[in-house]
Length: 79
Image (cartoon, rainbow, N blue to C red; front, top):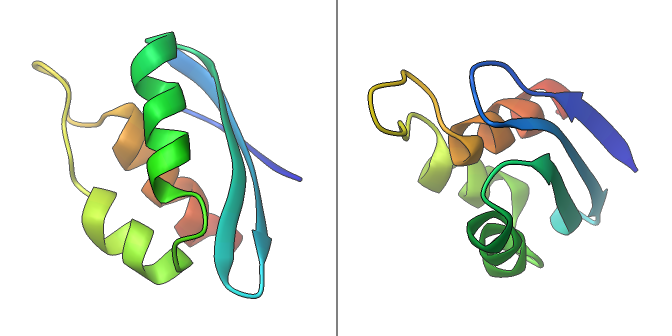
């Protein structure tokens, strides 16, 4: 399980695993619980590069990042 400390979001940490290039066990600590659980379920089993492509650059309200964007950054750092 890989852990990433987020920056600029309500969520403080993202944990995940990657098996055979596919994302699994995505867990956000803090933030909007229902929305972040949904993101985790939606990306589970997806190719890591596809998740990055879809989520990178998404912003939240007036912030330059979002929890989804932070997941993309965490995946990039992992790779």
